[in-house]
Length: 425
Image 1 (tube, rainbow, N blue to C red):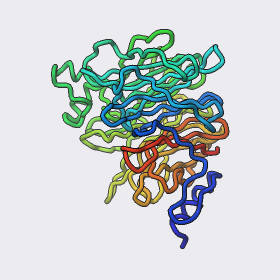
Image 2: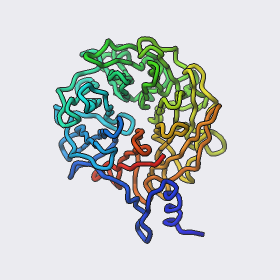
Image 3: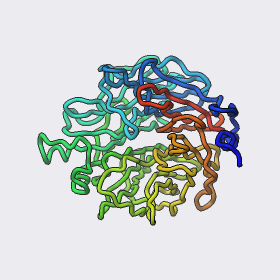
Image 4: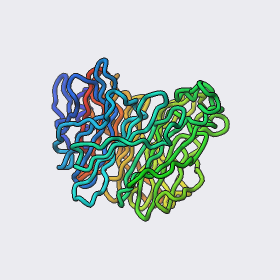
């Protein structure tokens, strides 16, 4: 029987990268690391358009709160420039695994794409702020607020995407109705305090950002309040959003809406899969969504029952956004607690799904290739992406030569960096 180091090498070799062998090694040579020295760097997101790549993450310095930083690559992720701060008010960001700063690379008439970054900011009531760079991520304009000015209550868990015309589409979770129902008693986002009753007053909101911010719209009520949302833009004016919904009986299943007219109208919420996961609390684990090869694709974590309930990753797709295929289980490694799932298109007939799970006592980023078929997909064997490292909270984007994955890298929250690596498609 081979040892653990050789086992990890064999898994990683499937991705076409070299692993150093020997005691205490097992680090992929292709990893790039980003960060601000002397700080905790965590919770990244990534976006690419051609070879132009932008990564955003939170930087927490002792006694100074958390700021939002962005670093840009112009060679498909091979090298990155020095990170720059996007927020104006120091230390204002409220960031976690399910509400990271969200970055989008935006088409521009100037040749070099714009960079937009969205984050949750603290204060009397939390706000969503968006800053945009017109010089390729070197400097950012003063941020604007996305929600109605002065809206009460807590909000966040946002996602954002740019369509081919350069319009940004933003969705987020909002507790303004809960705050309005109990003035001076905002729950601060902890929907589990009141269970399904509070969820009925929690909303999914949507806005567009072009030359101005469009009027926000409520898309759904009854959302699971601390699970991240997901949004994607596709061909033919299609937009899709997904989130975890609270159904009768406190069932926390994934729901989705789609638009065929660039967000002017949306379908009624659709239940993607009846997982029947009943929990009187928020699992803080949302879905991921992508358009690819003429279909809408969703991946999400849930818990499957039995004698010993366990976490699991599932996938489903839809051609028109109205009917999803039966769920497909994406096999995890022989670890535990797979979560923080992400999905991205790769080759024309392939997707990459990534998540983190505990492997040999360490949070580790793991990925699987999904081979598309006429009726759905076939899931490949899970493969270690961050062998021998403490790694969590991955994010993905298609990029030249494959898919870029970024993650929080390091053994402690006090001294972490952002790992970057390409997975060949």
